[in-house]
Image (cartoon, rainbow, N blue to C red; front, top):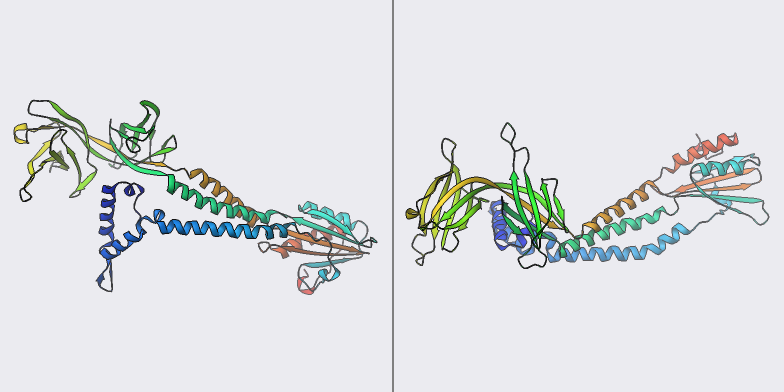
Length: 442
């Protein structure tokens, strides 16, 4: 389901625009011929389905999940520790019964068999332990491989907890906004009045095109200031952001601007600078500005004439006390470099000096990012150690001239194949084939 962008949750006007877009997308939805789209959007908005990750019910569920994982881990850890620590070197004769799987017996062995077995197990990275009966007539050898790796599941649990905690930290203390800047314009990153606030400036913007007219790239020469001093500058691209003071500046979008100059009847300059045409009217770029010190607004729409020459439609809008009276003061079309006559445009001369472009940046601060990376490493480490290094255990019992062996392993291991390989190597060193149950004989 489409989600509201983070900046819309901080800007009421942007929130209204985004919800209008939600209605446009989902309002046509019908079920059994009944149009349920508008009501569905209203209900989903109240339930927070369009802002799931900041909805109170989602936060509650995440907290419940974290608590469940922590409680489960604390309950399981002592038993897990006891299971990996528990080692039983000595096994009774019934343990080596050939009717069980992964059991074998060598008869007629000589005194070199213990060393041969120890060599095979060490070659396969088993850790050996030895035991013997009081009289010494029975000797036991136990091999353990990856004994403690099962504890790696704790890394997996830790990774899940850190993932959720990192997301909670970002949701609680993170920051995200979208800033549109024409060339030469500046804007504060956070709300005006924020201590040590950053100021971002669009030094220049470029969007070179290919021979077919498509854009090959778009980049912004960006400068960041703090307390009046420049602290960072970089040309950013879509996949090459600028990072400074915990904030990341991502190149996100761009669009046209109209460089205007507005003079009053006396010729005094009231405004000079770019107006962002970041809106849309009839499929054409649209922008709006209010002439400083007046109650007159300018609605700008960028169009093209039949011969392809750009045309800027300028509509003057003024305040009116009569709700039934029109508030359109004038409508003029300007070519690039042209100006209006102040006498016919509400006393203000409007000049279109040049066409330009604005840059759109997503600015983020993600304090939970470090925890997310640690969570990722912990989770991957736990999974790799658990699934690729499972525990194997091997027992051997020497009595007289007979050697009995057995093997068990975690469920992720093809224990039959590994046991067969160990037996092949041991048989080659002992110079004889082992006795096994008929179904296991090779």
